Image: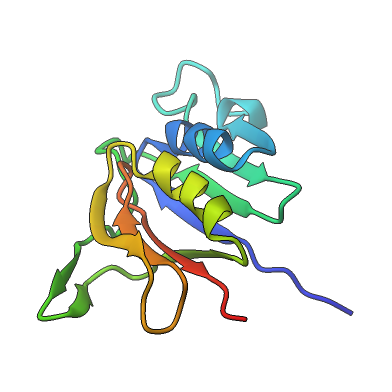
Length: 151
């Protein structure tokens, strides 16, 4: 028996743009269903927002997302700030999304794509525990931790 976990991100109006962006970064299949798709009258404000979204790639990457009804400020819900201070990471965010690979080359490709419009918290570079580690907060307010898997 096995179990799979999938990060589910809750957005304030940006779920479609975020999911399409993540699909462009990681590849795979992007599924986007709106509230209208599930019966909300199209003329109701927010009917065009995402009630179910998924990016699923053959490489194992999966993320889900939706728009909180009535929220239109943009970005991820519960966002905060993550920064480096005195050689440590300081954050008030509830979660990070972590990706890892055996290949620095593979991770660098994802990193470079995620970095478009992002705030770099810690550049992708060799660390004491990994051949490559980096952290950034993307343009949607999601913080990503990127690590080369230790041998």
